[in-house]
Structure formats: structure tokens, C-alpha cells
Amino acid sequence: MNPILRVAGLSVRLGGSHILQGVTFDVAPAGVTALLGRNGAGKTTTLRAILGEVPARGTVEYDGRAVLGRATHRLVRDGLAYVPEDRCVFAGLTVAENLRLAERVPDPDYALVHELFPELKARAAQRAGTLSGGQQQMVAIARVLLNPNRLLLVDEPTKGLAPAVVSAVATVLGRVAARVPVLLVEQNLAVVRKLADDAVVIEAGRVAWRGPADELLGDNETTRSLLGVGRH
Amino acid sequence: MSTVILLTLTGLGLAALYFLIASGLSLVFGLAGVLNFAHGLFLSAGAYATWWAAPHVGLPLAVVLGIVAAAATGALVELVLIRPLYARHTEQVLVTVGLSLAGVALLQSVWGADARVFLRPAWASQVTGILGANVPDDRFLLIGAAVLVLVALLAFLRWTRYGLIIRAGVENRAMVRALGIDVRNAFTLVFAIGGALAGLAGILGGMYFTSISPGQGASLLIFAFIVVVIGGLGSITGSAVAAAGVGLLQQFVNYYGTAGAGDVSVVVLLAAVLLLRPAGVAGKAVTA
Image (cartoon, rainbow over all chains, first blue to last red):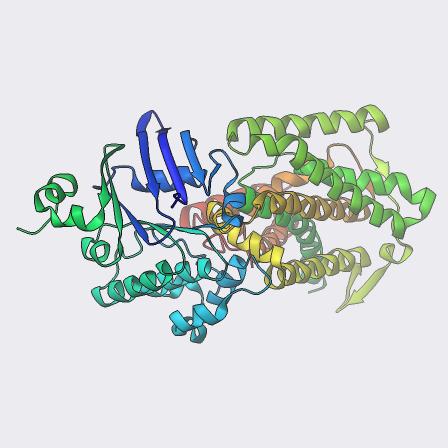
């Protein structure tokens, strides 16, 4: 099967720093591809470059079409959805307004959103800025689930969340991944182990490893050397 | 007592002008991040278009034409001059300052530097007695227009799709784009709205001062910028509260203090707000 996303030689310079130095990897058209690496390796920049949020060079093919340089909103309308790091909910808007803003189709899938996140229905009139981190993450994920997507870019969805919430978010992502392929940036290896089919490890702006996720996570030495964590 | 009433209503009338200018400035800065020094040009476009058209089509229709001309000027400036410069803030400032100066020069070259007498409805020249104070009716016109605009703006921001986009965009433009929304259309819209409101302020200012001049927009813009900062960037209600504070302070200090003390007191108020509450009255960038 052809990949849904093909990234080749992706290079980004920001403020005089060469953040990405020819990143190359594919995202399978189904399941979860985990994008891993230590802090500052370039994972979030990779997602932002794919989305056109930072100037980049190289090739990004989405569904067979070169898209590097396309406006972010056009890519999103073409089904490339984004759940950013730190949620980025609109704090001054209510939960309902956050969701309404994200609607791109005449019949947004509120049934799915309310099935996965029943709490959001009850908190529709609450300002998103007053929600807990976990609840804000629900809003951030719900925003993209309202619309039909062909690929989700999800950036550290469990960052800063309580263990019980991490588990709930992972479960939801697992269900979402059964419908739409996901490129997942994640530091929590337990979540990666649970969800990911493939893994790409970025180190200092370059791809240091790529292959099946269970192969990476099953190799304690490689995991420890590339990610600085692992079972002892 | 009658003096206090007259000063209060005159101060609120002036505040209405400041609010009409400041609300557009605030939205433009809050959403698009543009410090628009050319905003006074929109005011002049509305005032001069109305002044020019009134003898031909009558005052009511001329007012509509003036507002449309100012809105179109705002939209055109955004599309042609600002849009290519969204990532270049220094150039934005240079372009808007240059446009402001060029606008004044253009008006002077076409209609001269002298003030022009501005038409106003006959009833606006009359006075109404309130608790012994003879209050000119144009104050009520200004205050009424500003209240209507405030309610309409809040309703627009609260209940419409574009209002939602603007409120969200003031918080995080990049995230609005990441939801698949072309935020540039909202930029053009807020420039048009800001232009229309500034144009209305120019027209009402013409009625209040009974004349218009090429430099009127620039002089009112200074106080509007102060109102925006005191009110909180991007906040409409903050602008309304700040405009009332500035207008009243200016009137009372000018009357009870020495000449020019009102303007100085406004600057002192600005400094106090910046020291005690740097984000302004609203405290944070919200639009409703």
C-alpha cells in the first residue's frame, strides 16, 4: 500500500538553527506511526513543517500530491488534521464554541464526539480555559473528530496529564486510529507500545531509526541509546 | 450640578468618538497584529465622503456613503498594502505611518488645508434641558451611536461565525488556520469593520466639531490609541470602558484645571494603567 504521507529530505532552519536536516520517512495509510525522539530533536518542527506552519525545504507528499508550501488551512480542509502540543484550545471560548469553530462540513460528527467524550456535552457552556488539562485534551481531539479526515497529526497528547487520563486518551486514540491513520508524536513509551505500528526516531534533526514499533521497543539497548529511556 | 451633568454628557460624547475609533483599532491589532497608524485615514475618508456627497444626495444617504467609503478604504488598504507584510512588522509600521501622512497630504491637495463646515441635522444643534443643564443634542447622537455600535459589535462577535473566528483569532491565529479556516478573510473583514467605525466617527466628529479638516483623523487617533492600550488590546468592552474614562477625565480636568491639563491627565492615566495593570482594563485579549 502507498503511504498516506511521504516526507523526504525535509529541512528547516529557524532563527539561525538548522532544526531539521533532511528528515525522511513514510506514514502508512492505516494505523499509528510514532514519531519519537528526545526533547528538542525536531519532532514538533517536523509536524509544523508538514502543515506549512514553518518554512521548509524538501518534499512532502500527502496522498500522492506534493504539498510543501501549501497554505495550512487548505491542507486541513483536505483532511490533514492537527492536534497540537499543549492543546491550544481557545481559552476565552466555551467548549461548544471551540467545537463549532472547528466544523468544516454540514454534518459534523457530534455523535462520535459525544460518545467518546460525554463530559464535553455536559460542559458545553463552560469556558475552555477553565477546564482541566485532560478535559482540554478532549476538546483538542474532539475538534478534529468532527470532520472527515484522512490523516491526523497528533503532538504529545498525553503530555502533563494524570495517569488515568493518559490511559483514557490512549484508548480514544486507539479507536480513532482504527478509522484514520495517525502520525503521533509521543514521549510516553507505554502509550507508543499500546498504539504504534511503526516508529520513526529523530535525533538532532535527522532520522536515526525507522521500522516496526515493537522492534524498536523490544530492543532495550537501541531504545535507551536513541530515546534515553528503557527497561533496565 | 448642571455643570457636572453638562461635563459628563460632553465627556461621554467625546468618549463615543474615541470608542468608535478605538474599537476598530483594537480588533485590527488583536486579530491581525497590525498597529495601524493609517486608521485616521479611514476616519477622514468617511468624513470627507459624507461632506462631499451631502449637498448632492442629502445627509442621510451621504452618511451611508461615507461609512461605505471608509469601509472600502479599510478593506483596500488591508488587501493591497498590509497583506503582503503580515510577517514584517517594521515594514507594516512604516507603510501605515507613510499612508497616514500621504492621506493628509492628499486631502490637503484636493480640498485645501482649511477646515470645512460640516452639515448636521437641525435637531442636533438644539439643546435639551436636564436638571438645569442645557445639553446640546449632538451629545446624545454621539452617545446613542456608540451604544448601538457597542451592542451590535458584541452581538456580531458573540453570535456569528465570523465573530467566533475573530474571537478565536485574537487568542491564537495559527490555531485558527490549523482548524482549516482562512484567517486572512477575517483580517480583511476587521479592517473593513474598523474602517466603517472610524468613518462613522469621522462623520459624527464632523457634526460634533461642526467642521472637518485633513488633520482631524490623526489628532483623534492619538487618544484612540491610548484608549486601546488602557482598554486592553483586542477587547471591545475594554475599549468602551477606557473611552468613557478618558473622555470624562479629559472634560472634567480641562474644565476644573488649567488649559491643556485634560490631555496631560489622560497621559498620566495611561502611565498609571501601564504600571498597575499592563494588560489593560480587560486584563487579557478577549473581544467580547
